[in-house]
Image (cartoon, rainbow, N blue to C red; front, side, top):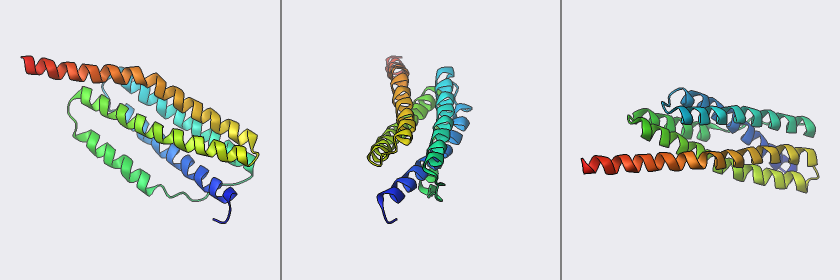
Length: 168
């Protein structure tokens, strides 16, 4: 990579590929969570990930570029490790907490990626690209805010259940 434009293109392509991979994982996990609210939240995140990927594809069209071959093996490995950990969990509440924790972890990572890409697009004068990426960033931030209360409720339920178990 010889310049900032190439770096931007590579980073954008990597985010695109990771977004597609995570949409598949969220779809799969939403089928395995028993808690109806968490199931819906994860399904919504999968839907937004697909929309985010479409916005990134539009960015590439606006730039007149094609995504380069991304290296997402480490990301796939991390998600598969999480999937294996999830499969070992038996308690439905703990499974729901685990999924929400991992979704939030990915979303926090994704917010940093989008913030960086927005700044790079703005610096390059690519306002339409910056606007699309800003939209993805806003969706991600909104989702994290939306899930915050549900996550807190699940943690409280888990702690209350543990306290009840000790009292019995």
